[in-house]
Image (tube, rainbow, N blue to C red):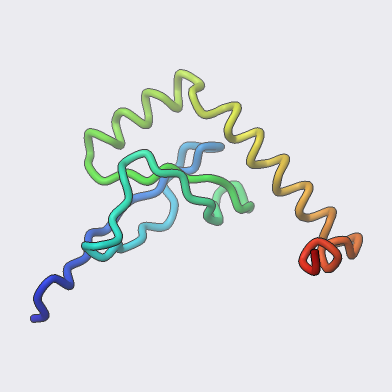
Length: 101
């Protein structure tokens, strides 16, 4: 076994639907704080949207309480709008112009 090469599996929850997404292993030196936002594909919403990174069961319970109280609604709407804007840029050919600048 290599020294210092451990990993920890973090769970990600969608801020739009509240369901658990795909878990990601993090290496010891690259751990993120609980509550870190990461844009991932949600298999339930069928779109790329921000997910909240959680480590423990207590964090999961806190997320579910916050989700039910509506804490993530504004952030989810902002993420959806960004997806729509990026999709329209891609379809209209403006994405190439954006990448060149």
